Image (tube, rainbow, N blue to C red; front, side, top):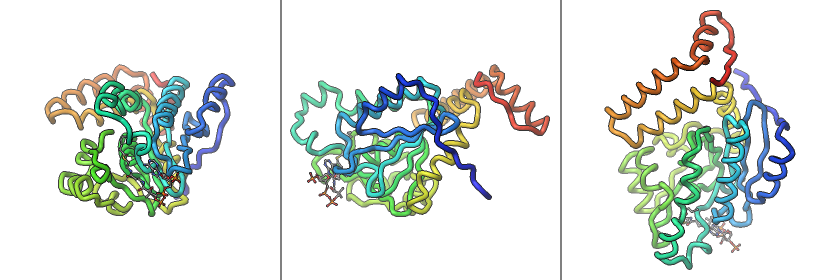
Length: 278
Ligand code: CO8
């Protein structure tokens, strides 16, 4: 089956474009249907996530979210999605400093609180904070050569951007313990088999596939996608009973949307829905 290819687009205001241009560590390309590709751009350091890069990423996500983005694709380069937090920046920090500045949490929580989905397109290394950043995304598409790992204990720290919590939820205790305690890395194939990665493709097709996934998300009703994402995310934080209740509330709430009427009417009339995003 031929896949729809999304093409680049250019209808951001000059003000937004000017802001985006300031961010040297995150390159943004706009596509049709409210899709944006964000490429981490610190190749000389394997896209190590220093404070400035993470700040810029969180600002870009927030700016695009407020400018009608419907889905984002986050990627790195051929060699690395990201090789972790910036070790030279972290090495001198004291306990008092990391606690005082709420290191990681102050910036990452803004990314976590977004309501639009992010599809990660991972090639090469996704280590430490890089693996955690991929896991903070909603869906991971990996190139065949992608490698996932959490090598933090080898540096005398533990994962601190969700690694201990998200990996176990994705792959289960045995594999998560192996990765975190022994430093085992997961190939793309292992990561896909164990549930961390959703799709594997040839390396040079990862971004294209992620854009294709993003298109399939972006063409749906925005509030419905946002509710579905919120409820699936909640499953990680709740008992089954609370999660079922939350799902039920949100399921009922979809019946208050005109998009519910439109989606079902379109099905019955054998045509594509014309979403109003309300
Ligand atoms: N931090 C800082 N610099 C890095 C990092 C990093 N994580 N990874 C690579 N670099 C730099 C190197 O210092 C080197 O810089 P320079 O040229 O100035 O010496 C350059 O990138 C190239 O690296 P190498 O010379 O080492 O190249 P190799 O091809 O030999 O190896 C590797 C590449 C495998 C990526 C290797 O550099 C490596 O093992 N990097 C560290 C991987 C790692 O341990 N990651 C975990 C870091 S800890 C972490 O992520 C905690 C997360 C905390 C929360 C997140 C906060 C944002």
